[in-house]
Amino acid sequence: MRKIDGGVTAAKGFQAASVAAGIKYKDRMDMALIYSEEPCRAAGTFTTNLVKAAPVRWDQQVVSQSPYVQAVVVNAGIANACTGSEGYGYCRETALAAARALHIAENAVLVASTGVIGMQLPMEKLKAGIEAMAPRLDGSIQAGTAAARAIMTTDTKKKEVALQVEIGGKTVTVGGMCKGSGMIHPNMCTMLSFVTTDLAISRELLQEALREDIKDTYNMISVDGDTSTNDTVLLLANGMAGNDEITEKNQEYRKFCQALNQVNETLAKAMAGDGEGCTALFEVKVVGAESKSQAVTLSKSVITSNLTKAAIFGHDANWGRILCAMGYSGAQFDPEQVDLFFESRAGKLQIIENGVSVDYSEEEATRILSQPEVTALIDVKMGDASATAWGCDLTFDYVKINADYRS
Image (spheres, rainbow, N blue to C red):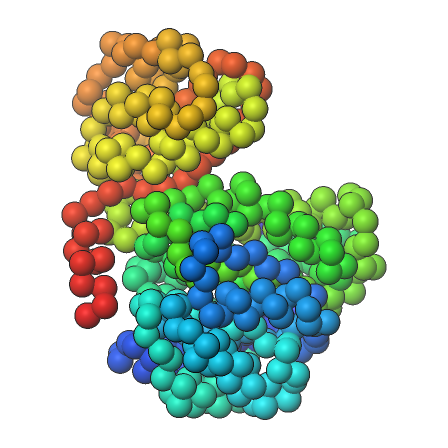
């Protein structure tokens, strides 16, 4: 497996385009189009929020019922959530406009939106954007990167990754892009992720691979504890790598799952590290747990603790907040057996041993916590299970960004 340049256009047959449609932003690209030269098997996972945006409901139907998918239309700025039957009708209008422009079936078009909740889409602008993008579709790395930038809202950087792996004697590429910075606490954010591959694989195994992988990737990140109405992860496979179709869970399937995991973990961490207003990616590793579920519960409780996140922002080794967050998580453990280490590229330092503080240097701890990527390693000494969660620090700017988001 090797990392390569690119994102959603890295795999064979995938193209992208973007345009400044003026959906909400007046000075930047705000629409993207992903297209496959060949029909794709499609898989998807979506928000568990009871309040689901219209695009989520549209995509759930397409993924479950359409024989194939060939395009995805994405707009940034307006979420098309809490918009009633009119908003759902706009999903259909979007798909129909894309189908006409690309000469494909209406039920082969997925749609995605991100941005302000409760506003209706300006459909004339959106349709004009589709018409402008269709002739600009391009399979270049640059086109994929431009699309990754076009789907951003409060994100400060584009997020994309691609890699290649040998499967069935063929070179298979898996690439993806995502957006997400605030309202990030997936339970499958305003999180959108689009992953493409030229692998040939059955629809059932594609869906299972995605469903299982999000448990250790997107569902292990949190920025602010808010699960969005629009969370969507879409995985498209067009089979153009030429491998024999994967129809069973064999070695080739496991290779793909490993590649998919690396792509999804990279994208998930990129979102956590670009949380609104943040200055650091905060990673929490729980080891020595008696079960995976216990490790997941403990790590996510720490990563979502506002007091802990504020301490990371202040580069303060306030370890009591971490132990406290573990204690109210609902997971059972012995606080008097817990070891805690802080680690970054500046070094590694033990902070507590068997539940009490060791004689550590506050200055060294501050130096370690001042890096852009910081890890808390927690050993509960109960077994061999482990889990890792990712989040970010909590800063003054998070409040500023979200206090005036609609304006």
